[in-house]
Image (cartoon, rainbow over the protein chains, first blue to last red):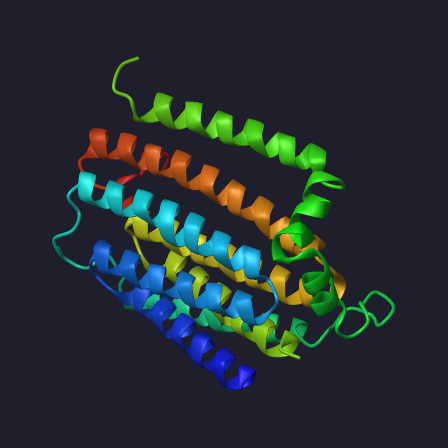
Length: 171
Length: 98
């Protein structure tokens, strides 16, 4: 049952990713990307990452994609013009490079982490039921990774200032 | 165990993202393909976190924060470019070409 649902979500994610890459209109592209992101969130749930799935929907499918659509509509790129794809030589090069990459990644996929590093089976289920889905992530986030967390806030501040400076006509 | 299939799906999604970056000339669509690649990497992190402990999920959190920062600054740059060139087609941005 879980496996079937996983393949359903994966198929949806891959199909809408292909549509996102091939659609001519940026708005259609953005909406297919939202579909991909939501499918990936469903896969996260199947992989015991409930909190990350919620964050994926809120931050990616919500905030970041709204930002993209906002800029597309601000620049009035919604109407379909001539295609922006490369010509046939460029397409062939891009396709063959992507094919080489997928073969490489598929080969790497079979190299799994050594058995000593792995948690005993059912450990993530135990953690989830013991601590809850949020505390499982929050505990290491605010203990082991406290300094990176604080640096992230500085990064977000810098990005905010940078975006205002870049997008404003005259300060 | 869904580890193997999840890594395979993330490999395919990453390659589709790379394909989009190589195929398109619209700067905003290229940005969206970069987001797709970041998501594929996040999927790898989550799939491995199921076996190696919740640290991988913490890392996904950081990747999301960095992706949000990158998207805001990148889209601000696209806005600035559009103001100068009246287009977001990367073919017209050839100031550095010799």
